[in-house]
Length: 339
Image (tube, rainbow, N blue to C red; front, side, top):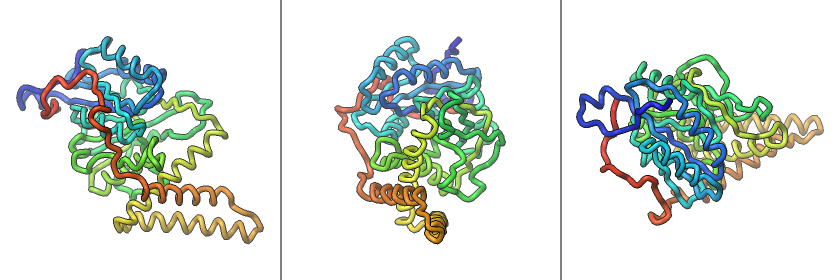
């Protein structure tokens, strides 16, 4: 049974310290049928009795039943969240829009094709309360369908501090369908870079860029396997894997160029190591009379991602008339309830 723990503004500092508020943020496009399952899994979550949660769904110009799904959800569970529609079909733009409407101390990101474990919200609050120095947490991601392609998952069962290790853009330890940050941290590092992510000119790289910005700023990031999400991405083994890899490589190409232009020495070294490895692989293949087509495809994708980064607009803003919120804002802006 759903607990009555919607996010409300605290009336005084004393009461705000007794609560912990979580805003679950989802950026969606044309996945209304899967969104239903995500919403259902959130409603079935266990929660701490003194914590609060809401969900903010940003609809990126969907043409399916997404709007109806959210209208039904909000009618059945008033006060549980908000539905924000925008005309721009880009994930990062949707995330930024949703985060602006979120009122929680913790911004918990997941995807429209995910289903959270029953203890996800409970363990999320416990993890942040256990260590006030934690700025962000990523969790375990398992396949919902065991027969799906083993991509976009993180299966390690070992908890660890991930920001203690040098950042490696080739293998980030956490991903956006099970990722969260303290609101104050996102306020400090800034919004998602809208040149990255699904629906942008590059097509991916939003998670890599945000994680690096948080770690680069000196914040503590951890991996907590008890935070479990099941990913129902629907990609098939073989035929869907190559396009996925290409999107990731495009994202990395744009990411490298962004930080090379900023003079970031760590990313310079990362890019050098990857390009050197590709050159060695190509040369080795040539010496054996073989053309390493896989490496060529990866280099081509990284190059196209770098070019797309240069050409992409920094922000994909909507006109106010093309952004709608349901229900309309019912409170003046202010600090959300604090734990």
